[in-house]
Amino acid sequence: MTETQKQPRKKVAPKARPDASADGQTKKPDASADGQKDERDDQQLREAVLAAALPHAAFDGFTDSLLQKAGAEAGVAKADLKRLFEDGPISLIEFYSSWADAEMEKRLGDLKAMKIRERIGLAVKTRLAILKPHKEAARRAAAMLSLPMHAALGAKLMYRTVDAMWRAAGDTSTDFNFYTKRGILAGVYGSTAMRWFNDTSADEKPTEEFLAARIDNVMQFEKFKAKAKDALANFPVFADWGKPKK
Image 1: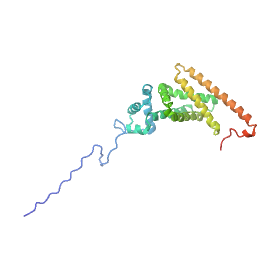
Image 2 (image 1 turned 90 degrees about the vertical axis):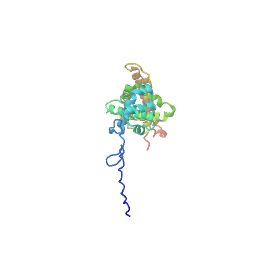
Image 3 (image 1 turned 45 degrees about the horizontal axis):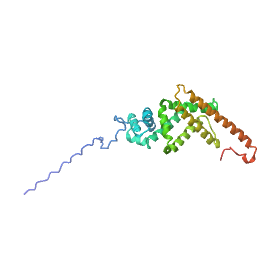
């Protein structure tokens, strides 16, 4: 009796996955919503989100929903949005401040031909001019940074701004003046910005006059400090006062 020979089973080819390529490798999902690969770098993505957010921030404030809306309008994937703004809306505000600082330095250019008070005045006015198209959004960002939970970040961002102003003005100090200049300018810029937020005039003359008065105060202080330094230099115990620290 002859045994029936078993026929070998045919191997069934595995079904192709919808996200698999011809070589069997899994495709990565496209970054953009329209299926096109997003070629923008992180800086460009952040700028796109910021540009989309500012018109809404004037009414909605800086919130999680605002960030999501701006990300969608800018065509930024949710995963990228989370990576680019790790701390949510407050990260967006931090980028807003850094972007304004960089734009200010770019616009100021070479100020060597100007007097120091003119350089500082122009730096302050230039940064406010950058914020002006979205003044209410800038006011809301400043208000959020004034909250106790964000006070440390607010101080850090203020330091970055005034440091950028002094560097644009050509400051090369390395001694105690380095810190006093930035501390004084923080007061000038901070108070002027608050005055500007509440200035509803068409020409913003009240803000310009306020800024001019604050700069006058600073220059008077600098003159007093210079006279005090000269006077104290006659006393041996104060001979090294104000010299750069090693």
